[in-house]
Length: 621
View 1 (cartoon, helix red, strand yellow):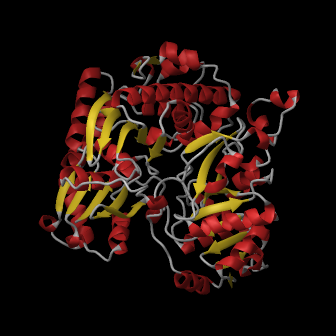
View 2 (cartoon, one colour):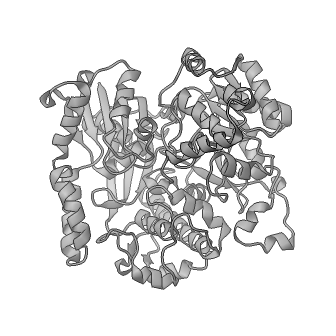
View 3 (tube, one colour):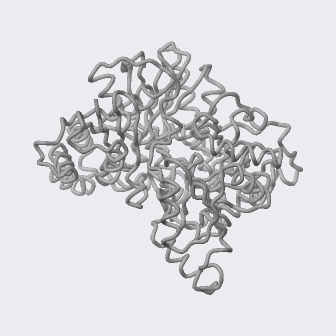
């Protein structure tokens, strides 16, 4: 039984292929189109999924979409009617698109699929629709290692639900209760994302990364005016301060008066107030999530919790759930946003619609390595075509060489195996460095990623050594848990250092691994396992044997605004247009200094111009 799941037309379009209950392939459209958070019909992602098993569209038994458009249209109409005459501008902007395209989504999907598969619309396999939060819940529970678990989904909004609770049992998902639009924790966090000058549905992780630089001075203000939070975690927003239900912005003038200023202009300088606002909404979000998790544990009576939805990417809150809410273990869908719902929808058809049994046999996501792969021959053919200079080394020799390169403070682009599914690079499309180097964070941010200096980097740590560095036991393969750095790894701060504010905090090395230690002594952890990524594990092991350090800095292989690289060509272009020192493409090792383009074929000025053109091809995130 072959099932293709789709998400599209909002953000992070994706496709996923499930065959007889096994997850075969999954990828976001952005990785192929090179448009970050691409919301268009995922034609390239579908082609990849079919290619992975040499299938055509006619070979599929079911195609399933992650949303029910008529329910969403009902919500839009009811909202506009309830809040009329406010929202007229938003109504007139939204309705033509809905009436022309989205209201008849089934016809649109069949037309797009028919064009893709070179068949007639009536020949497209049976098309099904799940509810949005049902797809989130299925993507969280069915791939998890738990036979029974509570499931909590938190996002902006689906059709109506913004928060939903489910009981996962064997092959069933039993809905418990939900909170409906317009009361949404995800939209509350996005409102503050907008107000602090970051892009909604893209910059929320920046807000989370900015929070430790500030003080939560506005927490009580948020509780007093914006959010009515109950002891059980349920909540209501005060819509007098928000514009997302009726307008074209997230917040309104009343919100601005509450904080004594207008929204920050994108790309303008960050102020201490921005950092304090970020700290405040992060603290509020964590409190809501913790209360909800405790309530869910009591009501569903499970030792295990699964999470999905965009809010589940808030790894600081996730880490606190694991430490403070009494669950034995936690499992989070690595593509927790809408992309992962393509996979959840396909799994829902297999288990819920078709009634197939499920036996929990470990993590079924295969480390999230579900995207395209390129052979050594593919890599060599590309490098030869562009005239690149490279050495081919067997694994053992390559890893020893890379350990030496990393110890020398060099930055390496690391490309191997299948591309990751979800927003995190997990050791197959990564940029890596030495975590002991106190300059590595600023070097990577400013000279390679070309992004804001405050943004933290994650450690990729050998799974067997995670507790040597961090206050954490167990697995965190998807970089979705934050934990404190162990006390013995920390450097004590002087009174003068403790008195620093804002970005000044960034300049103080806080531990033996300063490049992955955030200003609050925390780290967003990826545990690397020999069974799911043996080459990456072996590389870090070689670095440990040389230096005694069992982790590396890991950030995604891209520049700011660029989707994570997919192909060897994209990796090479990124390498040549940044200040990365070395590139690894499978078993091919390239030094920047040895490339013809870098040896005088062009002047430094022209290289700078080429780099500027490269960066301008991507819209800032």
